[in-house]
Structures are given as structure tokens and as C-alpha cells.
Amino acid sequence: MTDLPPAPAPGALLEAALYVDDLEAARGFYGDLLGLKAFQSVPGRHVFFRLGAAVLLVFDPAATERPGRNPKLPVPPHGARGPGHVCFAMDRAGIAALRARLVAAGVAVDAEFDWPNGAHSLYVRDPAGNSVEFAEPWLWEESD
Image 1 (cartoon, helix red, strand yellow):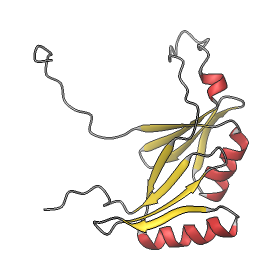
Image 2 (cartoon, rainbow, N blue to C red):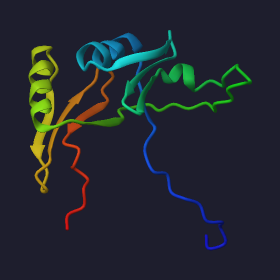
Image 3 (spheres, one colour):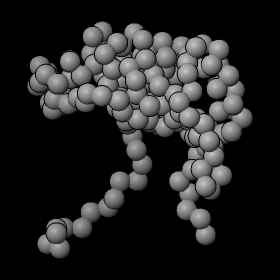
């Protein structure tokens, strides 16, 4: 790989994708329960949620595994089967408030703990079985 031309490394994550078999259940979980704003959807294919400058893409893999039909948007087929993972940044007080809301809505807590660096994480499952984490944003900060 020493003969490759130099290029900058990406500076931020723009979007992340999860795959679900029930888009309406996902809309209820991410939109109604978590309060994310859905800004685009195609019935039977996807619903997209805005998170500041980033986007959470929620797809039905049965639709996205097939080649697209719009030559102006040549997105290659994609999809995944089985549970994925996403982590949302929240402060500790926000995680506690959201935990109470999730539990009141009947969502089971998979795990909740403090990492060795002291950052707090809460894990639950969305209706499709994806692992959804809420963590303090300094979880991945390097220690001095």
C-alpha cells in the first residue's frame, strides 16, 4: 500500500444505517419514543431521521437489497440481516430521563454501566432487535 496517493482521512460520520423489518415500528421507536425528527420516508423502503448534522437512515433490507431504478441516483444495493448497533450521545441526566421514559413505555434495559473511564452507557433494543446505546459523549476521549 505504499504506492497509494495521499488523501485526507474523513473528519466526521455523516450518516449511519440500521435495517429493520417494520418501518412503522421503527418510526414509533425512533420518532415518537426517542423524539428524533423524521424528515424523509418512502413507504416500504426507508425512513430517515435528523440528528444535528448527522442522519440516521433506517431501511427495510428487502427493498434496499434490490437495485435501484433511478439512473440519476445510482446507489448500489445494500442491506444487512441481524441486529446492528447505533450509539447516541447524551449527558448523564438525559440518559437517566430517557431511561425512565423507555422503561415506562415497556422497553427492557439490556445493560447499563459506567465504563472504566467513568462514561455512562445505557443499552436497549429497538423493535427490530438492533442494539441502541445512549452514552456520554466523552466515552471515546483519549486519556492523558
